[in-house]
Length: 396
Image (cartoon, rainbow, N blue to C red):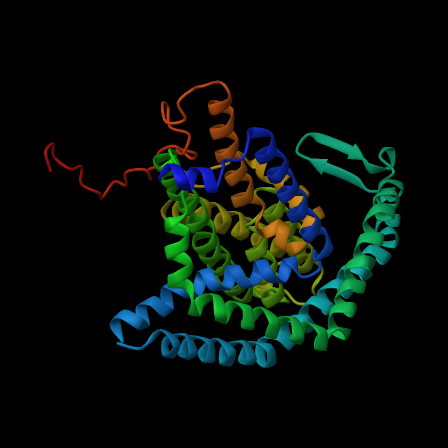
């Protein structure tokens, strides 16, 4: 740059940069608050685009289709799939959800009457005997119902509201598909701009942070999608095999529950056990209590198998956060953006942790790469060596 160029465009002083930067942040926050109603839809469009870009790239490279042709093929196929699911599975799932909630509400209403006869019941376990009248179970249950019943009423009202807003939901779906279509169509240009984004004198740091963010969001957006899908399908098949009603609804609930560690699967497990306990028919001539116990044990085994064998292979160590951190992030995300904020709470928290580590190191004039801040999850967890697996020889 010549001296004439420097004179024609003087540099901003530090105070001016700080004022402009602060105004830019305030403007972004104001826009997010003003248009927060469509923000979840834009996030959903971004998630859908992220999932479909690899498929469009595959058709573009292998099938020799142009970018626009490959995008059109993918979205036409997606539209057909969504229409099929909405007509075939969607109505059935909605009916099962409503029936499930009605069943739970009837249980809540009739539970005090069922427990009224337990006052004189003596529970015998081996040499020990316990008279339940000392615990007054009916009073305890009534106190619990004061908390549970309003929640069930709200959930039932939400389902009724969702069914009544079908046209609005269809308009939102069209909006999300339209935004996702244009993002996927121009994804190669957006990727080039993302790769070209840099800050003078900080090029290595920017590149490394971009790679770390890519690992975090790749692990979640594609890995978590597979985990939710596999968990939902396996739960639905397992509940159908065990003769549990509402298997489709329970499968959807269990798949979504995998987003929240411990609390999500536990809550769905309790609901599933109640459904199995109170349904009129039980397979294999099992008692209601035996059927419920079998269902709960099967769910625990399935959940542990997914956590132990599938999660390490699909998610790796890029998104390994403590369960308490994920729960806190889920509460904050749900309060801000509802279900979308709940689903994106884990990768968003991992992103904040990464950027926070970098900022903290730079504030204290420490190197962010010694030790590296982008190793969030540590090394990839290894599976146990099975008896039939041969131990590799050294040097192989």
